[in-house]
Image (cartoon, rainbow, N blue to C red; front, side):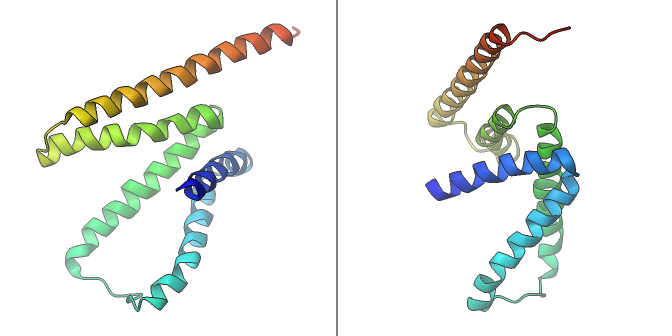
Length: 148
């Protein structure tokens, strides 16, 4: 899990740097292409079929591919062009909160005390980071004032 967090941090910062020079669509296309290439040996070793899919899986696969992955990462890196990588990555932590809310709405799952407490912890953490970020930027602007 630590390796995953490190790789995601590198992906976010490098993705922001790449999208400043190019496009979010190009960055995501390369990311998904290289991800597929790295997963190919695992697929082949486990003897999963490469090009066959049941008809009932086509719509869910389209939804997951286009909306959950494609549009989500496109808008994520598009938004990163307008903010810092640290502030932009805070949005990532809202996903479990939204998943719990959507599960309650669409799947009739009950909202548990753990979900409420987790939501509060996540929102408190985001608030602390945002407050510290604003405070440090004020300190930096006083140390290095912008000349007119």
